[in-house]
Amino acid sequence: MNSQMKRGTLEMCALSVVSRGDCYGYELVNRISKCMEITEGTIYPLMKRLKESGLIDSYIVESNEGPPRKYYKLTDAGREELNRLTDEWFEFTQSIEKLLKGEFGNYDS
Amino acid sequence: MNSQMKRGTLEMCALSVVSRGDCYGYELVNRISKCMEITEGTIYPLMKRLKESGLIDSYIVESNEGPPRKYYKLTDAGREELNRLTDEWFEFTQSIEKLLKGEFGNYDS
DNA sequence: AAAAAATACCTTGCAAAACAATATACCTTG
DNA sequence: CAAGGTATATTGTTTTGCAAGGTATTTTTT
Image (cartoon, rainbow over all chains, first blue to last red):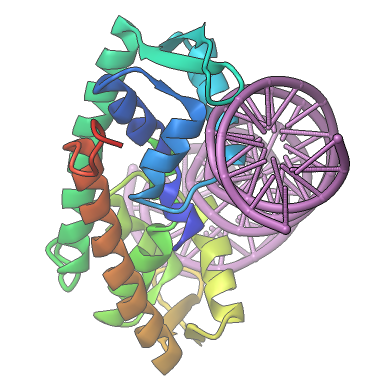
């Protein structure tokens, strides 16, 4: 898969998954992996950025199946940003489709 | 607009526009600008990369409205790559949509 | 009990690419 | 001749995906 296509959408995907239920990093990797190739080296720095910008909060939960898990939870700002990103995403894809079909007057400059 | 979302799609867009008729850089900027914000600092390096990978050819045409224009023309490899990128793009957007709707089993992992 | 694998976290460093800024140069119009 | 539109190209900055490496806990296999 084209690695460049993921840019700008991964943030939206992570926020979207977390919006449907609190989630820890490792779990997030597995869930998003069903949609696109992704590794932990991508998710952990991303979640750090999201927390620094106040879009998510986190809390630790002990686990009896391994090391403690850091759960992520959407903040109000995160929910707003998710909505904004989703709107932007649909606008963008529609715009691309128009261009691919030549619907931007590509023959009459 | 989210600058990151453009990544991986600009190449496809440029190839697509050129596929509907030979085009020079400045013109390409104007046409793609109808779809997304873009500047010359993005297009010229991109076209250079595309030429280096053999996806486009170029030829100079004198102009009486300014400096000579460098026209770009799709190669056979370029046309193949455009088809590949387009398929990938639609697969990708569909996959994202599924994830946004929570259709990847986000509750019963 | 030792080894391996699965679970879970995190960081470092590299590479790709968008874009602002800058430079060059041609032509037209005021 | 100055301003502005047309046209190409490069440099440096920033962002971010990801491979590679590291730590630690629990379970399973040998």
